[in-house]
Amino acid sequence: MAQIIIKCKSVKNGDIVQDKKRKLNIVIRVVLLIIFLGVAVFFITKGIVDLFSKKPGWSNIELEKITTKDGEELYPYYGDIKINYYFDEDRQSMLTNNEVLEGIYNSSLGKTFMLLDTNNNYADVINLKYINEHPGEEIIVEPFLYDTLKELYQYSIDSSGVFNVFAGELYSYWQDQILSGDPTFTDPIYDEVNKLKVENIVSCSLSQLEKEDSLIFDDSKMSIIYNVSSECSNSISLNTQFFSSIYAINDLYDDLIEQNYIKGYIYTGEGNVKTLGNHPVSSTWDISLADPNNIKTGASNSFSNTYVLGNINVVTIGDYLSSGNYGIHKEDNDAIRYLYYDATTGYPINNFRAIQIITSSNSFQDTLYNALLMMNSPFDLTKQKISELSSSSTYILGVYNATLNVGYDDIKAIISKEVQEYIYFTDSEIDVEIID
Image (spheres, rainbow, N blue to C red):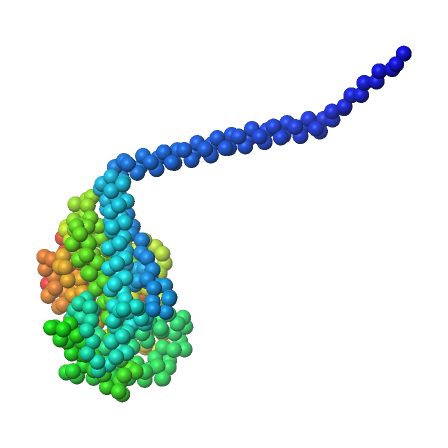
């Protein structure tokens, strides 16, 4: 009789465990996939709903790079001029208008930056660099550049050279100094060569301003002739200096208003603001005044607020605005170095820590010009200037007093009588002086 043999495959406990783990992993993956798909569907649905639903809100406009003649890509004004705009329409219209707004923004800033640039050449653009490189030639320029140079030339005359459109080399010198890192080896206080260099720039800039034919304007042709003596050709250059962004903002403002963009504001990181109209949500614009002492520590630095209706300009200038600023200390020569300087001395202003002006005037550049004059004036003359400027449309919000040897330890706010009702101080230790 044949024998039947049945072989049974044994199943070990370990195989059972592994099988269970595999099944569990499959279940987990399926669950995660379902969750992922659910989240994706949620956000896609939400995006579609948002696209066609009414959702008003603020939008920050992006700045694009421009290309020099050498192929280098740059952000106009270092990307520091920005727009914050309020859209109160449906999402689709907002996206469309946002593209239009970006187009105006980039076109306007790209154009003004190329015209005012003293360092780069651009295809088919006659700019400040070109004018500086072609002294004695009659050059026809764009209306924006023509009007800007003509106004800054007049500022230079009116200020007796405190601001000097020909002192571009002085601006470049201090910019290099501030960005160089270690001031102890290169600052004129320590370096006789640099001291003589600054003195030569000042001398040439002032002599250039005194010449009747230093800069000739022809309104009929929009042409400029820049005449410079051979002995000073390497010591002076035309430069819009601290005014560049102010003129750019003014030009951008005109372009936006012309196309009925009136619900937002243009601003820079330095504290310059130009609103496009009334606040689109609340009744007033809320402007804060910063304490430069607290900038260094990172503490809350806002100690006052003012509330202003309508279209306003805010100009803030001071020594605490740039992280590259440095202080020097040698015997009695304590000072803070920064880019606002007196072109008649060649050195940064140290009379005051900062000044902030609010005005409803459309003349943004005049506001900055007056702020620079106040920064450069002794204490009593600054008080007089504040009294002259203070009116229903101009508010001198704050002047910080720091004499040459005071440094960061003293702060005083000077508020004109006309603006007193608009100011609320949250810091009771601030010394407020009412100007008669």
